[in-house]
Length: 272
Image 1 (cartoon, rainbow, N blue to C red):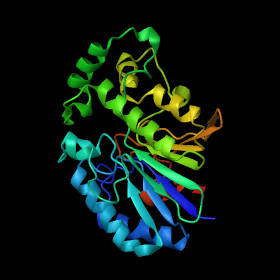
Image 2 (cartoon, rainbow, N blue to C red; image 1 turned 90 degrees about the vertical axis):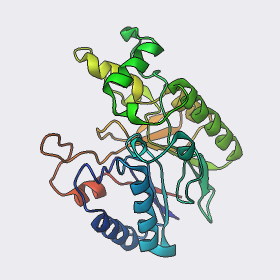
Image 3 (cartoon, helix red, strand yellow; image 1 turned 45 degrees about the horizontal axis):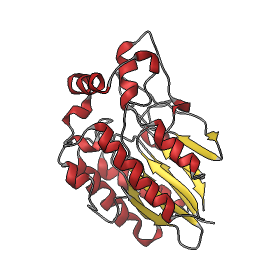
Image 4 (cartoon, helix red, strand yellow; image 1 turned 60 degrees about the horizontal axis):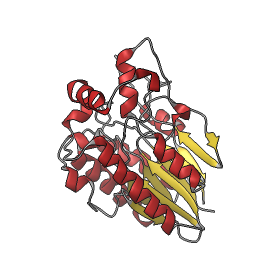
């Protein structure tokens, strides 16, 4: 059996966590607990180059004992990266639109940053695509992300490349890792808060979950919502959502004041 670890929404810079200390602590934990693969599903830094640097340092710290991979969430994409670069093979560690076969097993880990197409917003909102796009430009951090295509076009690429990867992995056990939300099952709606209702359109895409379930993907790991949930099963697919989130005085989502305890408690462990 191969031990696999997944984490998401660490937000090291926003949480004022020393990056070198984080590398040392995470590397030590992975090695001491005999993990062989570690995948981070995005939102590590508000800077794409810092995120790349961090996982390069982590891979160097664990050597050949642990395979490190990472994705970019929306926060990673707000600085120092173009759309073209984000969609390219920036590093062997960057799992976006790639698959990692776990040696000695029938398991394949498929990675994709993901995106959104407004399909997770409640129908009662009656907002158009133009409404969501305008709201995003006015109020959402993602307005800073370089993007020469529409949100729907970007999400269509996610669906197309995911379907290709799933087809290539036919007959094998698939673990799919993404940053954005692929299912409405774990969404929370609040009609009394219209700003949040608009934001739900920018959380992900229900069409991704439908695709993953149609291919009977075994496990899906994602983040972005910043609330922690028990695994949810739908049509033979298990969804794992355990983001570390923010531990700030003005906004705390932690259950302690120790970031490393929060990282450990939100680590998703699977076997291959």
